[in-house]
Image (cartoon, rainbow, N blue to C red):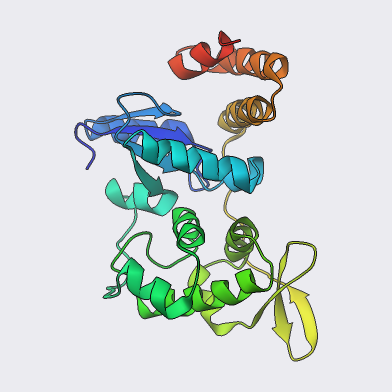
Length: 244
């Protein structure tokens, strides 16, 4: 998928710095840029977007990508497309089959898959994915939003480990493990942080996007300007900085 592909990155990657991803994409004959352009063929949703933007803003980015004709890719989907992550175990279930079995809302399902809350990032899905979908549907019925579920899923380490847990939706928009009548935090290994210099640039760009989404154009422009000090060749940020 690399040759001729134009990837638009939305949010920082959790697995490795953007500069390494860009180098690999370019080695395969593709292009990696921030945000969406008219030439974007695939919109990559970095997992750290969950830490930076509210659920509604993330969903709006998803809708914009689909409307622009770009193929949404999860972080794992992006890595698999580049051959940087082995394929998941063989699956045989369609998206519709999981929706029918679980009762999970289609939009919630798609956004959870977009942030790798399942073993597979796209169909065919596995039996473990069906178990996870049913578990997520119960959490959603108890009031948990898709974003809270996705964030909690990754705190557990491998999402497939959740298939063996009894999960409970708390009133504080958090997900807990249930042990009999007791509730505990979901424990898991955290992903390695990005390198400091790349991380700073990512945080500035995402803070600028958040300010823009919140209707604070002056603050957004200032943040884009600071970001361009670190990434002067980013045409998307340069355009946004000059947009009133």
